[in-house]
Length: 199
Image (cartoon, rainbow, N blue to C red; front, side):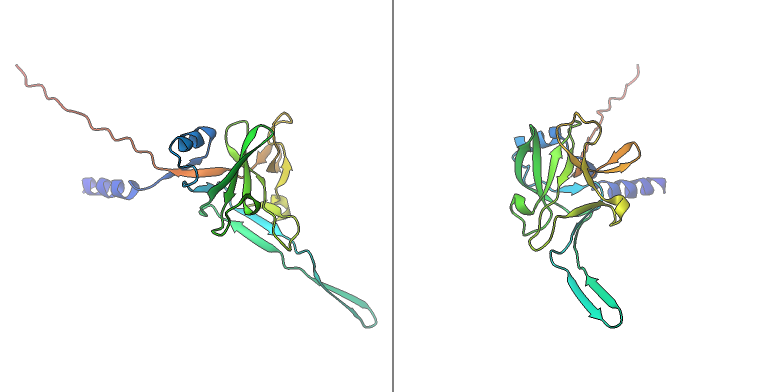
């Protein structure tokens, strides 16, 4: 019975790929195989980009008092942890590589892609949000759309860092959105058994 349970557990867990941070070393390995544009990348935390409208609907009514009503319909673009993205362009900023990641199928250029810059620890963190036509500059949120979860440009750990990334301050900690990849690493080991025959 226990052998059957172990066999079922092995079959169920054999196809799972672990998520790990995309580092400069991983990206260099992908470049050697010319697979950097074909591999899919993911965000470490749910990301919401909110774009306010340029022109708001506003009505004014006067009847013994002045009533002003404003209707705003911001565009919210949600990138979940399971949303696959693809590298569409690369460039550098302040001596550090920057990857432009497209999470939408129609995006093929850096103008509509999210910018992730390499930080001092070798990981790629969110640095810029794309702009949209007919909308104002986007506000990024880590997790949910709440004022206390709004991402602000800043240095992650020290002022000596090369580039600013979008961070969420929580006391001494600086929370960010990182790029991750799914990697299935299997090390198969099969021992060659030699039984002693005895004397």
